[in-house]
Every structure is written in structure tokens, then in C-alpha cells.
Length: 460
Image 1: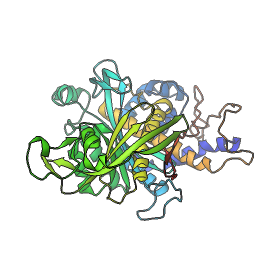
Image 2: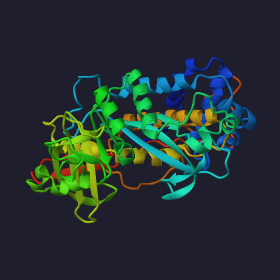
Image 3: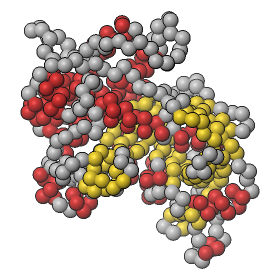
């Protein structure tokens, strides 16, 4: 980045925030939003209310009340984020592709993340599986929807998973955490479905959805996506039930019963007749991987009976580690296997978004005891991430002439306080520490190379 580019980030952020002014009825509340978002983009090691307020010279209680209690329309902020993404970063339905041979269109990525917590006051906290720690731990779990188009990646929506027994069935506890009465236990896949519908209502048009086996293993979720006319490629557990061929009889006897995905891929006629195809997958930040794959059309199980239509079942084996993955897709029979694999593996891109959100934006740093406060914190994190994504896209096309295209380490220079609030008539607000903004996202890309020689890059 040039000095001119660095200097331009501050005014750019001020203009970015101005696009959300109508969501705040009072100017002071809007100013608090600016303070909070600048804190999220700062170099603070902890981006909860207290350190942000102290760094900005704002009363801690004031900023706490802004997040949890002040009157501002966070739903309108979320809708504005989504509509801005549609208007500025996604193609019109039926419009031209990017021209990149690897372009698979607009991909929605569904995933969840968890944050370990102490105590029992944070909304949704309980002992449950914590993916961040790889074990059962006291934590909260949040469900997210992201979008990817080409190199652009942004978060669209975030929601708290409210456990059923420890929270939904204890409404007194919910009341203490200010959880509204209409917020009840919903399975994670249903939360994801609601997020998809919200995004669609705000103009997002997905060419594909992709998600892991925690969601792919729920047939009811897949069938509802079918009803919505949404294409997906999802990972499923090896125990996922299907028929490699339509059974001759409606019978529970073993020869006619549905088979597990691993059994169907190992012994089903459509798979046995195929040869394994080798696909090479390269990521810039990891060692190259080779996968052998097979794919065939199968019938899924719905209400104990085979579906009327067929779906893709893909089995992929990692040549080096022996890891086996199973994917299901409702794509049409003529869909290219390489395209399905590109969609399936680009799901890892949301993991990069989570890393960015946690390490650079403070997604998991909320320390309050308010459901509304937690929800608003996640929405404001999405705003900050969108700004980073937009500036990354802009600066990617503005490399200085002496730049040879490499991204190797160079001389580090002190960043100016580009996230500070703009000066007012009375002079700039005093800050206790400087707030540099992270200038962009690290991109990781994959190359899928089948034996036939066709290849394509997949941005993660």
C-alpha cells in the first residue's frame, strides 16, 4: 500500500458509516456507532466495550448502553449491509459472469462458530461442543451466513443459537438476559434457513449454497431448500441414507432398504462401475492435496421412501491422509463434477472469514449479558468486515507501479490513525490510543486439477 492509499482509509470509513445514518434517529447514537466500529477496526488486543470506550475517551457506561439499550434499528442496519453487498458486489441475476474460468457465481456459505465463556450469564451459554476448542466446553454457539463471489467474501447474517433445556425452557433466565419472548429454541439448520430467507428478501440471489455435515445431515433442511429452488452442494455424514438405485419394492427388508452413503459409494452399482478420478487441490497457505473422486445420481430418503427425483452423491478420498468426505447436491444431472467440487471446497472460505472476524474484528469479544447487545455486536462486526472487504477489493486494483505482484514481507511502517473519528468544528476528539485499520483480507486460493487437465482457482 502507498502512503496515499493508507491516508485515504480514514475518509473512506467516514463515508462508509454515513450510509447507515438513517438507521439512527439521534445523532449522538450514530456517533457512538462510529466510536464502536472504529474500536473494532483498531489495534486493541481486546475489543469489548470497556477497552473501546477507554481508548476513545468515551464513558464506559455510555457505550455499554449504546450496544444494549439505546434506541436504534439494528435490523435496518443488517438490511442495509445486505443491500449494499447486493448493489455493489454481486452480479444482477442472469447477468454476465466475471470472466474468470473459475467463477461459479454467487455462493452462500453456512457455518457456525463458538466462543468459550466463563460463568452462566452470557445469553446462550452452556456446556456444549465448542468447535474453537475441539471439545465440550462452556461456550456460546452462533450461526452465520456468508457470501462469496470471485475474490469478494463478506458476512451476511449472524444469530445466536439458544439451547432448548438450559435456556428456552427457563424463561426466567431468558428474561434476565433480556431475551425476547418470541426468541425460542430453533435447530441450527432452521436458523440458517431464516437467514437465507432474510438475505433473499434483501435481494441476494444465490447460485449455490454450501455447508458442512452438521446441516447437510438434516434431510428436512435439504428438502426445504429444494422447495425454494436453491441449488446446494453440501457435506453429509457417512451415515446419510440414500438408494444408489431405485428399489423394486417398498420394503424394509435389507435388500430394498436405504443404504448409508459410505455403503452406497462402496457397493452401489453406479459407483462400482466407475473409475476413480484424481483431482489435485492446491492452497497457497497449505501443502497441495490430491483427492480421488467418484460421483453418481442417487435417491434420498424422505419419510422412509425414495425421493421422486435423483441427487448427486460425491465421494472424495484424500490420497495422502485417507480422509473421506461425502457430498450431496441437488444440481441437475448435466452439472459438471468440477463445478460441484469447486462449490464444495470453497466452503472453507467461511473459515477464513471467521478467523478474520475473531482475530481482527473482535467477533468473539462481547462480554455483556444482553441478548440484544450480543446481536448488535455481531451486526456491527459484519459492518466492519464489509468495510475491510470493500477496501481490499478497491486496493487490489490500485497496486503502485513498482509493485511486481508479489505479496512477500516488506518494510513495515507505522500506520496512521485512519479509524479515528473525523474532526468536528471544536477540533478532533481526543483519543487515548491510536486506531489503525487493517487494510485488507489475506486470500487463500485453491487449484482443482482433474486428470483430464482442466483446472480452476477457488478462492477460500
